[in-house]
Length: 184
Image 1 (cartoon, rainbow, N blue to C red):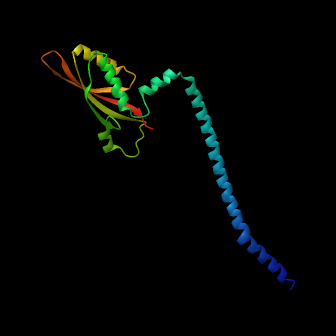
Image 2 (image 1 turned 180 degrees about the horizontal axis):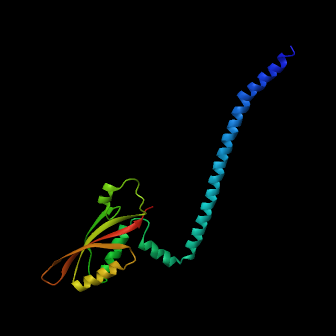
């Protein structure tokens, strides 16, 4: 009987370890690893908040007029109506009127060619759109209009200009340009 009690105690101790202590210890180890991961994520979130706060304070240092000019130059959304109104008011300064406006949305100047060769996600930070329109007027006036269009706040690339002459000395100019905006 004396030999059975120590053997039973060893069996009970082994069973307790095998069925209770070892699984509990494994769960504690998993929870500690998860805690470490969460602490790292929390530290990273704090760093990102600090960076965000710094950027917000830097943005606050800019004048409102400068931010508005930057927003007009490279908006964060497509604003076809605003662009058309800006171009029309610019043309009106030269007594010209914009006609036959055609809008063609694309994601890049070479979208068709790039789609065929691009592998992986699109990592560009901007999108673009082609706009074509027609104006009528004398050549010298059109040159001034085009120079003002190219130096306007809105970021545009003039891609092509074609013209047709009339007997009265007034030309019909068809302008194709590309404008850009930031992706949301």
